[in-house]
Length: 251
Image (tube, rainbow, N blue to C red; front, side):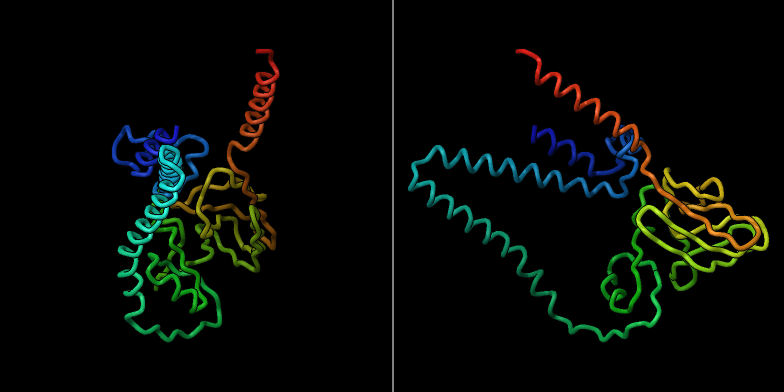
């Protein structure tokens, strides 16, 4: 079973390399369609290899006498430690060859795009490093990026409106806006199926979500619910009932 896990997630982690690649075939199914980066599946490859290594060491120690097994186990540990130091020491030494930069902290927090190389420096500058636009599996951009690589929080796609305040919490966004006309507002939040707005239908606008607004001072709530959540709960309950029934059935 662990070999199956290793092979599957290794091939799956290679991403979209052809029509029949697992990533291409499974990325449209519930659960898989929420994945952004195929390379994260290599964590399961490492897990499978680690478990097999434990099985192998345990079996190897069982074939030897006790005193020999203890010595060989220590030798194996020293070899692993030496191999890690052989590869890691040059990398660790290269991290301290340049002095740290002097960074001044900004007074106002803002989001900017980044490819990951300056993420920590931007954090010290009181800025958020938005790496998602460059890593999205579905769209080349999932944010509203303006001049100077600054991320625009909101943008009126149509109509005229002013954002008075915004409240962000898990699975909820509350916008209070003052609009002079009807229109649609796009925000720097990646579009996914499951978003609903109190003002109307949520639509995909170049990878980010947008919602309608009406004239006047209004409060609009956006709520996210994972697609297939109810179906997943029902399937899990039915599976549990079937498992208990099979377990209690006379052998």
